[in-house]
Length: 463
Image 1 (tube, rainbow, N blue to C red):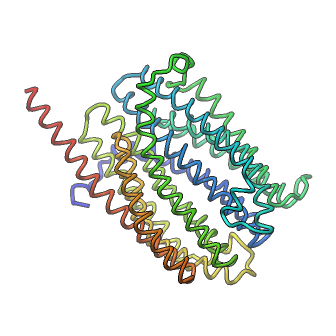
Image 2 (cartoon, rainbow, N blue to C red):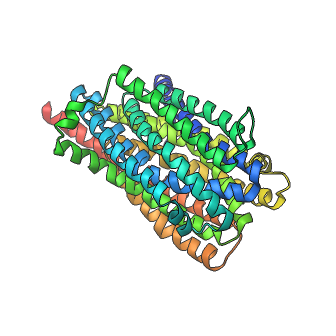
Image 3 (cartoon, rainbow, N blue to C red):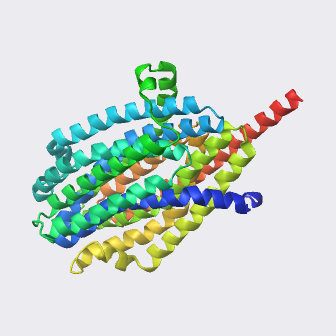
């Protein structure tokens, strides 16, 4: 970054942190639902249990991210925040209403498909024997809670568009408290509950998501200043719907480019054996926690930049973006340090200490993953800034090239053909993130320079 971009304004930092930290906490807590499932079933059932929960969570997280979290939700945050910035409250509520309708329809299709086609989905993914049998049970049960979780994500995105990231954080905390207790009770048979293992983890996850949804639903419709309203659903505007879809589709395709490449990579990794797959899944689960600062600052960046773009204040929009990026780099840099210093200890939290080879491989993967963190921060934050400005195509194009021109060809050769050690997968992923992080930063600078120049021209013409 150039010198002026590294300067931090205290007022800007304070506002960014007030929005970003609750978002980081929320993302962290949602991820901890899957982390605790993986950790506890790993202690309960070893490699097979870890592989089961890891495979199911990877598939469903990828699908939910494609259509909901980085699809409908991005469109909702961008349009709600920009219209609030322009003081168009009715229009903000109309977009909130349309987002909820689309979210409900997609959630129903995704969750029912996961329930009905669970055996086929897991078989296609390469699951066999115990992993397949337990995976079907886990996926069917969690698909029920997932329906409510997806709708809750849409409602959360509406709140974030109003700069409210604290309420979604509270919901995430409620979900985690319930999930942790029920995981412990129902996996191991504690507090009067039967010992259900992987099935218990699935029930705990679903029930906690349902409770979290009820909390957010009641808050949004009772207390939020922007609410979905039936009148906008009844008299649906196709023009407004098109605007929302126009933003959501490129963002969905961006996540699809990444998630499908990742899922395909998982299928190839399964060919390296259960030990390699378990090590990879544990390291991936741990690294997913480190995404949270970048994702949280990216969410804050989308909302803040969106508001400033709505106000036509491009200078402050640019300042917010760079502030979010610097703070994101600091937080994710701390994750890098943890991965380098304590890799074996962190991995051992997720599986029995007797699984020496899994811990060794997982620790090595995690140390390589430390290299990815700064590039990941750049991509998540500056991608969020572009989305706040209404540009969801640029992050998509970068993700598409990185996933399908860099990651997949390298994985096909090294993992699929040569059958090398699992840590090669992590060097490949590092190359992908380096391209994405540097690419999005350069294109962000070009885009916002264009905004500033057009704004200056408009001022000179009006003068």
